[in-house]
Length: 448
Image (tube, rainbow, N blue to C red; front, side):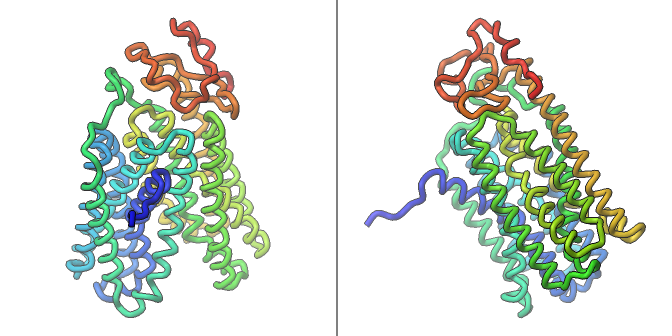
């Protein structure tokens, strides 16, 4: 009897989602079981906060420095390395973490594993998923993070309550071993630049740096929402159960919208970054309204902030990888690095502002960060578009929007004008620049 197997698209997306879950799960396990961990190892809340920041700091540094390395290593070796680091970190916490210092060192490893898993998953999506389904793939993949939070929450009444918190980290270690084994089963193929001259087809660093700043601000605001919404709800008159239901419903809507937005992105040629910016601005306005001390207002604004204001990560990753040329690891590494930096610093700074001037001012500041992030995304898009015109990529791509036909198509690459690289994600009747390169003006962005 033949062994059942998943279709290629489903298998790739499921694998990338599981890697994303594996990378992010340890910090949520630590947070949800912090009472048990701190009691056994004997450290206070201050050292717990340092431990969480170390995890995210390590992940940010690894993502920023290792994204390009992932592109050069290729999918197989990156998967093996990510699995190995996750296995050592997870099993290390389960077997060796008998003091705060040792736990801290192992969290450095787990932060590196998080970055390796996320960037490798992004690389896999960009290299394996067909272009016309990639938006949906990234939307599903980024939905794995809310699932990680749910799994970590379930660990408390099932294992943590019995003093078995180490077993939850052992499970992540076993997951790392499974990822390592799956990497060993991948074919040995030569990966990297798609054609001669692609060494010069590097992603535009100026645009990526602006995007890094944008997602740092947006991630700081979004993670502050996730960390303090329940406390603020209780403060304005919601019961703990009502605040929990609000977060659960908002997270569920967030998950659905991430998938839906990715699916819709596959039906058009670009114009994804304006959508990301709009979601960030909506999130900022919702946080501003959230500062009003009214239970009904908090429920409505909190739901909008969760559902719309935080549903952009998959769409942003898809957009950046799409215009980031043939370097999905380096491009997505900048995005992930910004997300990790914002995740590490945002809640801590938000808490400090709450202690200093109160919740309402803190929500207002977080809203401003969201709006500023949206403005930076639009600024980054201008740089991305200018770069596509001034430095045509090896693979022609369509951009500027449009469902039936793209608004623009990049000019042919001067070093590799081969038919095999003609607009892989545009329909056959899409408008194309003239072969002699005189259509550069026609492809210049016009108010995109």
